Image 1 (cartoon, one colour):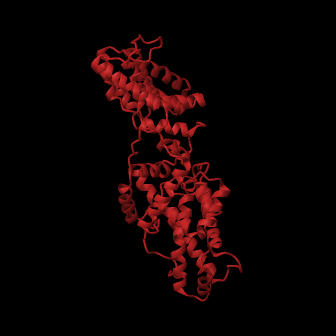
Image 2: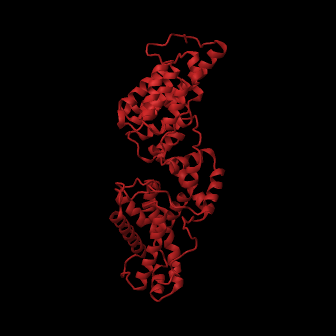
Image 3: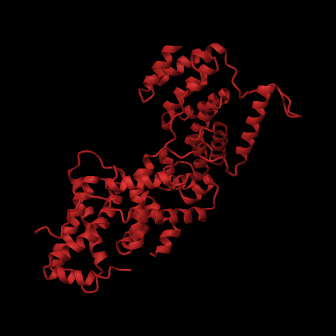
Length: 252
Length: 194
């Protein structure tokens, strides 16, 4: 192995994140026992990793070459114009949402029980970045995750949907698609997406989380009886969301 | 390039020089520690096996067991691998619960890094520009690949690599060569009576 190979094949990062093939790993170890330059780089990385890991995720710049970013920004600007001034760009008619409407129209009373702003997004699992992802499209998933962490819900939902399109049924993509829709106030679509996560059953690592967030979506949709039932199912799982589900159930 | 002084040091160890043993330990302790840290991530194991490896290497060199033409680096790495394999075998013999499938991974907590290096690295990270910090964070903390990082920060894969190399060189220059430590800094086996 040479220093050039180490650099070109991202061997150092692969070694730190334990994703090298056994033979490559062994070769690299033999190399850095001899090579001062590569060993220095390895040690530098090992010193930097705990510092970086303790830092909050840096904000994502809004300069990615992704159509949905521009589309989302334009749509948001248009919505603000309409909301504030009642002005619409020419040709932009206000139409009733199509069947299977995406925008929630929950009664005000239910919105008071659970304001949208109170819904805390679950953290995106960092294991995905370390190669534990079940999807065959980690780059697209990473983009979605980055947008999700930046709380760009609409763009994140579009990115996760794209992952799902390429890799149908990828559980993480469907689940975080549903969460992003919910936080983007597209409650009906979010409920439908959560149904797909829950439909996988016990095999899904997101079952409990999906149930808890589906219950919150049901509250926003004004379906309080369904929400109660969903919270009871969440509690029955006796997992991390039990307390949260109990607290919400008490409010209903 | 191999360590230029290896032959001299080996000869001096054979002749019973404590200074040569000290020099050998200073050079190889960090390497052995890095190797074991990557393989187990278990801080207790790392420290114990590091000490055992270097001690065993010194004993073997004193006894003249390094064959003619055999590289010192490969010799010591071989000892470290054998010690690690033996430790896993021993763990398996004494275990009461099943081992994880791949027990040669860093699934335990990372071995500690010397606090002064963490402080220095934290200061350097704070001084980095936002994009540079984001690149390093994605690559090192999140384990993303340059292609994936490029997609996020809007750069080509090669640009991400170049930027990473430049940042690491700069960081290495500021930190010196950071030793990943040692619970008892300064301990070397070269001076340990055997």
